[in-house]
Image (cartoon, rainbow, N blue to C red; front, side, top):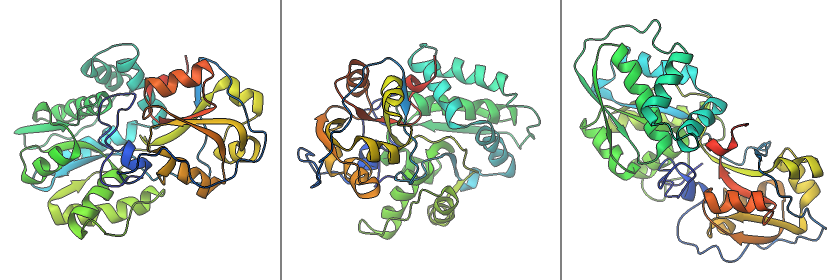
Length: 334
């Protein structure tokens, strides 16, 4: 879903290095002007409410940013790959939302949240012992990725390795470290990793390869990983990608649960779309809503990238629909 990387202030941290801004499209536009489109209907005025719900992306606007382990190929023994695949098999988007809620809302540490998840999901059962030795798990600098790193630490420790976790920063920092073997494992996001490696290997103007279909995304990602010395495990069904949320009260009032329904029922002057300043010009944000769904908001409100401004604007009835992250802990049912 992303071009190169997601430099964004997201709900779970300063850098969703896995990709929101680039998920909205290429950097560079101020986003002050919405795409040329006509919002001729009445639209759907905002409805305040505390509970937020994500509208189903039923026409697959967003690409497949599934959580997947990226492993330095020299360290990618069958036991290491199998251990990280245990995390993939146990994780889906609702569980990732709950993990993020535990850290970002309930204020548990990533290590505590990960251990509780591992215990509840019997994560270390049946893990085969490897040859041992040291493994450094690198993390991006936002809480979701830290929690995923702690999950990898748990399963790799169970596989007999001496595991430490080290926060590295954004993809531009951790990907070269992974190639060199300075770190051995990183929690990655499939489509964002593919977009990054595609431009790195094939040039800045390379044709995008990522897809809403995770099978297609992985089929393109693995060969690029081979070229730079990175092996990818099995992708989880958990996704952290751009999403569009409304309040439950809005969804109930207008009968809207999908983006197609939003376009059909709520295109018009009363509808206010909220998101980061660059959203109107991004192919995975307002521009994509127009092109894929023919959704035309009457007004765009410049806020943040899935952060507290956008979520507060939804809850207070300042906007009708807002850009969020699909794994945001605030989306957990309370």
